[in-house]
Image (cartoon, rainbow, N blue to C red):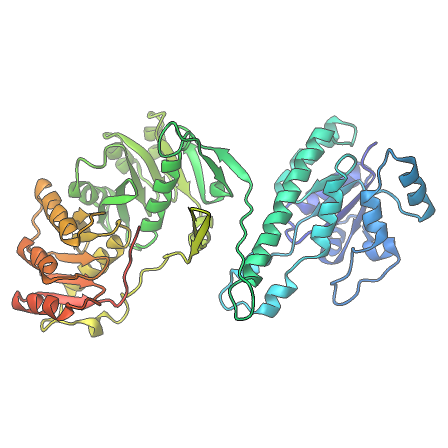
Length: 513
């Protein structure tokens, strides 16, 4: 049977008028509520209010609109069951063949700073999920749409099947509905179920499969990606992504967003190999980053916070790179990079700015760990009042410390970074001893032929002993930025004072495990 009656009630009205116009032209009767009905009328389409259809008014400031037997009966009764059909006729319940519903924006509401409980409660949709579930349960007869991107697919189905849709298509849309309502309920329970005195604590995750990944850490490990990664990053070319690619992309994007000046960073295994800046030419920023470590970038990830230019693309194409990430790519740069078919080109979308603030979720034996994301750099405010040594840092040293602190935040602990105000000079990552990380950073700088004289050193956590800061002093560092908080801070400060080094305690650490 062709679709004869549709109920439309949406918060996101993207593409609604065009879709409803097609339904009207196909002879479909349109039922609607509130703002959706108003939008359709403004588009010149005839609409029957649900309250007129049910004979029951909207109540309680719109909280009660569609919870009515005539609505849910129209969705749920079986079209091939004589008893169902007889009951529908007896009670005056005509069939509703198509439901178009997306939900109150609960997730967006609770993501706003300072959201109140009252605001959150008012954005819990009741009628929407109920209609979606009723329609999805009866997908044998009812087409249900919750994602505006599916409107063209419904139109295509109707055009090909005499204003009907196929069972296989309806089933696919129904599965999508149950995923969406599950995800929606999880967001509500996570918000309301936060640990409060006298209440229990819950955390629920419900995400649709987005893609199968090439493999996990190793080719023998299967891996899959769930959620909406592609809203944050668009792959413009290259091989399919692996588990480690996703981790590298996240680490690179997270790092580059900490910088405002034109910046290029090179990463390997989620650690920065080098970071460089230049206000005039992105190629110079690249060169500064590359000179920190000319060996590690082989097969690494390159990221910049400006559209990638042809000049940078030509330089980068001279070395083997796994992934390149940028907010955009000039057409000439794309033409250069397209010659490397396997190279993954990822465009970072604005959606990542919000996604990066979401809680970090990690599996553990028997469950999950959830923590706030470390999305902002801490400790750089009021630096002039955080000097702990006799000598305060110069303006140039201050600029270099701000730069180095933003970099060291993204290095696996124990982390040490030697830097100038616009470039890294040596990076030591992931060692069991902080002094070993410092020695590796010094060794890396010497290997690269870079002079550490007059540079600054940044440590992601405190120096527990004076020997760590002495290593930096011996290497040529004249200023240090670190969290402080060691039982031997006085010894560390004394060592710095003895060498005329300036030191700032940020009061914040940036561990990265």
